[in-house]
Image (cartoon, rainbow, N blue to C red; front, side, top):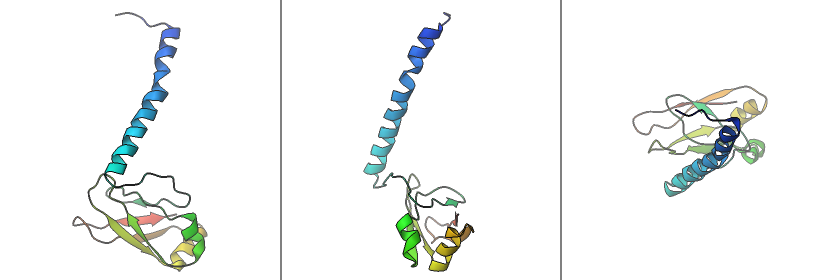
Length: 116
């Protein structure tokens, strides 16, 4: 077994950012192939029970003052759900109060989805 010097260790570590970028690019390509969009959320990303489904209450939706229906994307789960937020729910989220709603049933289950 050879002992790696500091210079060699730093040289090898230099490959990590490139490997991470390649892994991210591969993940994004797989999502595109599955019809899932990977993008940053400019508003509120919720948490949910069981497993995660990508979704976002966008800043535009937050400030519109109307009810919204969001799709919980399939991600890697193979199914989707929707959740409905009333304008009162959105106002509560904007004021810092967490709001939990129940999603539609898909794949024999629903989710408790919390915004805020």
